[in-house]
Image 1 (cartoon, one colour):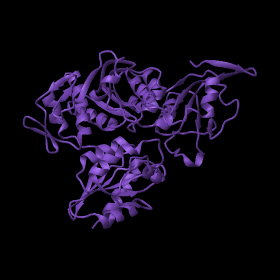
Image 2: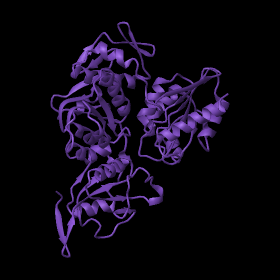
Image 3: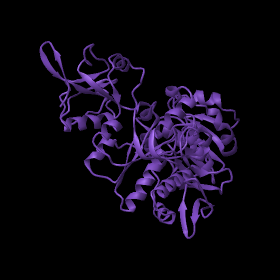
Image 4: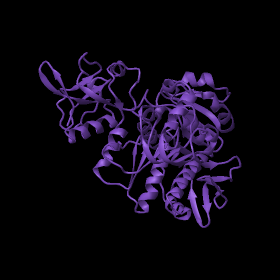
Length: 447
């Protein structure tokens, strides 16, 4: 039964307010529609810029775009916020003035399901880690779904019964979650990112730590050990100083070895791309250990894992030149990880939409690995102002122009790497579209 209010002698049913019409918002709309729960919708964009094809049978009478009337919120008892919404927007201020509770789709889901959650956050490696966990559990016939920030809204999991949900959570989601009960919560890493929203690193780190607010098993990268003092019984994973010191669930493992681009465990050989992916592997092995899954069984299954696209994705080798798509790199630390992976004589394609990042951190890696910088995007001058290098810098008009420039300048033994260290929104809908355009250009131009 919904609460009701009396307005001009009429009984008016209280409604939910869905804030935002991205994937999360659309999933909320379809869920509320299915449950026959009354709702309204607000999006900050003009209607013509929104894909409404996934909204089930809507008449849009209770939808508002860009602006809203003074009485639009009068019959709202709860607002469900999407991660990308600007918390300074006037509708948020109005909601707070009216003391309307704000929840997330995670909390809405929790009212209808008690499936155990394994929650994952971090600056980088979230999607890879949740995908590895999903691969591992499903191959053990433990029915599990990776969802959340990876593109599958958690409400869609209600269509089927799962043994575990592996939920990827961004800082934007964690910022708004009031309560999340998890079986296990882990932080892959925390580097400077999203500071245009969170202002300071310590604030960003505190938001990430909200993933531990109600969890049975807390797990974190060993590099953050000094920042976890207030998290009780936190366990750690990662590589400690000496690269052979692997930590899985608080314990050293001396049987895991690094050899070339493989992790070796007895007769097993697991390929990896960069030390950051070894950290992801150790995180997954730590969760598996907590769940009682033996390491040899885990590694056997993880040896068949295929990494998601746009993450140091090998495209082709031509004239002994290697081409890699790392379009998922939307911050400095992910580009550093890619440069740690590549060999010397790299032609690096950098740039995209503006974001508050410290590009000076790239300097030592550019000095060691990069022979040419090719810039795309609106933030090219900002990045250049942060860099101290004498290597050639070239501006490209587009992704295909950047590929053509790289093709003309690359020599045998070189590597061409798209790793923008920037979001893609100045030129593309998302990093996937940017990566697809890059692959297309490489296949069309590089002969």
